[in-house]
Image (cartoon, rainbow, N blue to C red; front, top):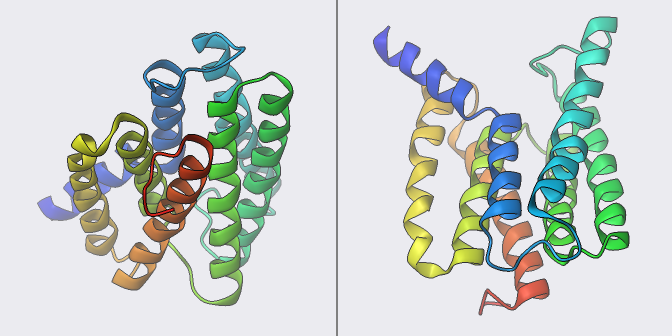
Length: 200
């Protein structure tokens, strides 16, 4: 019982919108690459609006209408949500390109690529873990943009994976696939934009 409560707490604290907001905050305020033509605060607020508030707000409205459930219980609902998040990610990419912010543009592409992969896996193969994907996106962003000495942050994936397994929300394959989606998007995109990953 205590383990389940702990797992629920970890799951709540690592909910994708919360982890996404933390990722945007890290990128806007701490990444050494800078936010280009935008102030740190403007980059953070625009990123938060387009990559968290807009897709979660749309989900909230759909849940109120009864066309989706708030916790996205079915694969069909998840597929629709990933499509919505992809749409807002591409809109964010366009905006940050126009505003001259390469780092926020790269982050928007990371979100777009991750959601495209999640959408495809969810639609054609199996349900994947948004929690592990969001957490992998944060840890990969930190590691790639601050340097390999920060690779220890990947240890933060352990409690996320444990909580999803403990609650029976996903099996191991679904958790690994979720993390892999964000990992691939981060390593490809940041590597392309900032030459930070020698594997590309």
